[in-house]
Image (cartoon, rainbow, N blue to C red):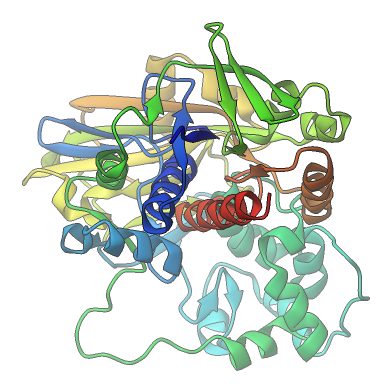
Length: 467
């Protein structure tokens, strides 16, 4: 029996997960299909990229998955990797405001106070700012509306000081974006729902977010990785795929719709005939791949930000003021160009040799994108200068690893969900059997991407079985 081909475009975690779940379904249901995964670069894994050097395990991109999101844990267990999992070291984290490190207040949810006592005792916000923030308890709820910026809701509820000093550094760090541009409904729709139901975010969070259970031992970290780094899940997925599934160094030039399905034309001149296609590439690649279809043109205007991280290895003795904690985020009103710093040797102790320290810093605010392109030496010095405003580091790093991610962080601006739904509706009519998944659509985290991959696979199978 001749097997028809299902093509997956993009070899990041979304594409690899889709290929895994698709081949699993094909085997279980004995379906007459084969899978080809087409990746433009010379490696798979996308933003997951682990480097091993001199006993250090260095993540060039994402460093973990959040444990409470089930799709990630489910895939890890299916792959037989449960015994390889490690939890992040827990400890104090900080926010840098106006040049000073402040402890992250306890009893907060994404920076929003859930418990009043710790908030009032914190030095992050002035007495006037605290009074303004607590007006959330009595302030009328906002009007019902389909979407708004995340920042507009938070500033209306709490005022600017709490938002700028505590909430914004946390939320902007997740999306590498500007909360005053971000879609509320695409990022934190629960905030809107809590305001509408309870008339106050503080009251709503108290009612709906349980306090962590009191334990005598150490609380397990909220994130997990693997003993040999996050690349472990990428390598295992590749190992599980059928031979010759992955086609590297192959750029999709464009995709033509045919009566029998689709022709995927590669820049090499090769053509893959497909009965269905899952795209897992960034949104800005879609208008070119499907150039005959104008409904995808709006994706050209969806912004994407660039980020870079600088990992620096030291002898522990070089850090004279080693702070007890796992790292800090930086508020916008601080005179720093780094946006966050992870003391990796404390967050992931097993990734650093005994007696050594590993620090990873991030740059690339929405309004400071040019910093990502600075020469390596200049970028390392910039980071060291910022670090030495809070830590006393007496030596140059033993080595540094700089990772630049250009136009890689999709920005979920106001109206994001509506735009995505419209594009998918048009695709179902004009491009039947084509499905979009990945960080540009419904969540930038690894578990979100895995979840989208599995959903796309279900859609492909349903489509092919009803043809």
